[in-house]
Image (cartoon, rainbow, N blue to C red; front, side):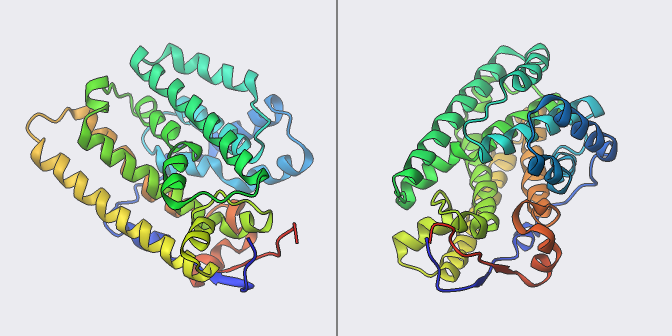
Length: 310
């Protein structure tokens, strides 16, 4: 995935969220961040680089932005799961079974069977999609755009994180309501927004290690674009998906307002919290831009490291 450019200018992702309110971070952010770090060190087999890099990920902040109203125990569990998700994405062979069993034990005691089936189904789909992406990378395959968008719905893991909205907010979304066409479209839009924004932010790192499972890389291949052109195109897709989310949200809130379940309304607010919270977190974590996050936020320029395979 070589590029002719040593740097690209990425879209200012926060600007896409003008119609979203960023609520105050969860008041338990600081204490939960400290507790989750201790948990990770005690529970997971972190190598030296992972241990040093854990604070800079700011996963406690991500949880606090995306689940701003839950209590400290709920926020801690969400943050622990985010730590596992990052490890699953970065190290496909590391499942951390014991740590997940600990988290699942709590989730299964505080959730209804329909939610548990959804979560386990999304977890299975996530693992299968990650395996498929790893096989494609090993074979040097870049997916076509349509196939990639479908696979990314699961490989991103965002569906699992949206499942945790119900846990963190204390909701009970029936299977019928969850599967309704309008809520399904809204959730589909939100997954794409978060996953594609992550792709734009992570492209520089991914291209350096030859990882083709990325929207920017897919657009470069399919549309014969430069890295800059593909980054711009990805930004346009995210903006269009934002517009789609707003349109579907208005349809849900207007046409279904009379009979809209209060828990569904709060779930939609949870999707909004996730979108705007994630966009802001991108520029507050070292995961994507290292120590240059503030400069990227201000100016948008991202250095493209050389491909390690070249």
